[in-house]
Amino acid sequence: MAVIVQTKELAQTVVASVVAGVGATLVFSIAIWGAARSVDLNRSQRPVAAAAAATLGVLALAVTLATVVIGIVVMTSK
Image (cartoon, rainbow, N blue to C red; front, side):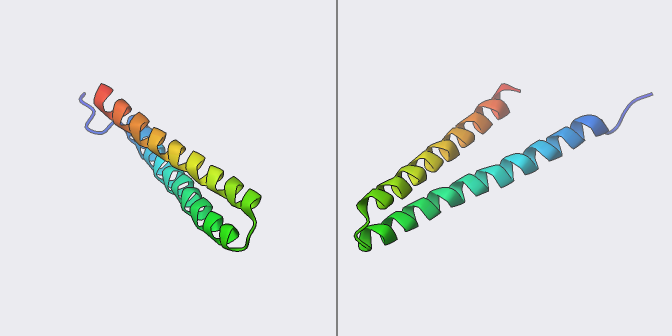
């Protein structure tokens, strides 16, 4: 008998896409927060804290870009 919908594979796809979507959004929001916080701290004459926030923002942006690249590689390899 033919199987119309493979429930296990469908569930795995849905879970993976939700986790990736929420994760990428969360990491990108951290990048935005780091950039905004860096500007605020820089205006408050706190250069060390501003540099730390900027570093966090840059790292989060790098993770976001890596997530996009990994997603494209996984999608094109299947």
